[in-house]
Length: 189
Image (tube, rainbow, N blue to C red; front, top):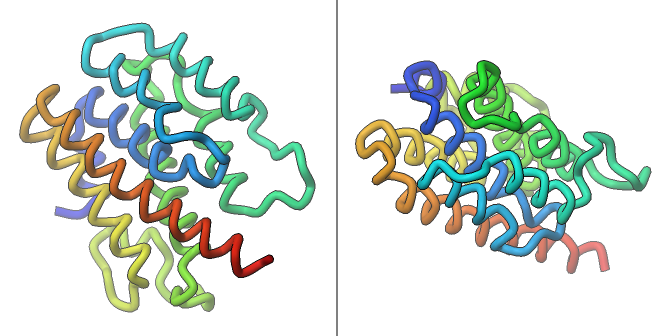
């Protein structure tokens, strides 16, 4: 089943976890620590105060404004800021599917931007990868695609019991992206 199909079939918790997982994996681009979004994961598990946790995360990551404060901030960080700014204040909101879908696209674009082996010609856009076309997919984008599918499958198969394994999948992806960002920074120095 394609990623697009999984998002179309996901319930509210699956959509919220999917969008949150995409955002969580990309937090290293904003300099956020690994625990900044943990309260949001907890609120999905126990029905806690999502909106308060989201506002704290926005404040901590200084991402309330979807546009970057610095003119030289790169496109990948701008995409992460937009994901965070667009997160619904209610994890059961009607726009949740749109947010999860937008986060999926943004996370794949971010990984494509950061993958040194990615095809810059744009011959196979991320939308095709989300539909199941993996021809010419770069390694970093392929790994992100697998993680997005895994998160949605875990939530579809286990409900609330899939949140912990989904968080583990996200944590693994965050570590990978943090390493990519670190290599990128060393390359600029």
